Amino acid sequence: MAVEVIFIPVIFKLVNVDEKDLYKNKSWEERKKIIPKMVKYAIKNGNKPAARKFNTYPSTVRRWVKEYKKNEK
Image 1 (tube, one colour):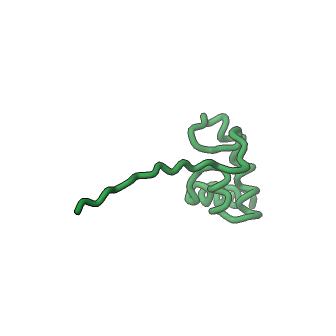
Image 2: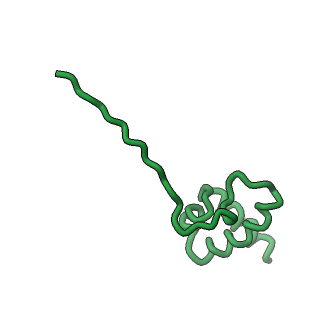
Image 3: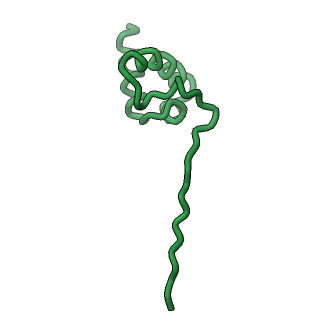
């Protein structure tokens, strides 16, 4: 008795995301424009939702929120 394994490719599409707001694969100049938006969104909604929205890692969001709060004082 042979078992047949079927692989189904799963394609993830980011919903309600504007390409210009994505963080990954951007130059530093482009990232400098995105970081303030990402920090504001993270403060309002949390790090994980911000990471999902801006296509990056929660640790990256935490780092920038920490920097923002440190420079705010």
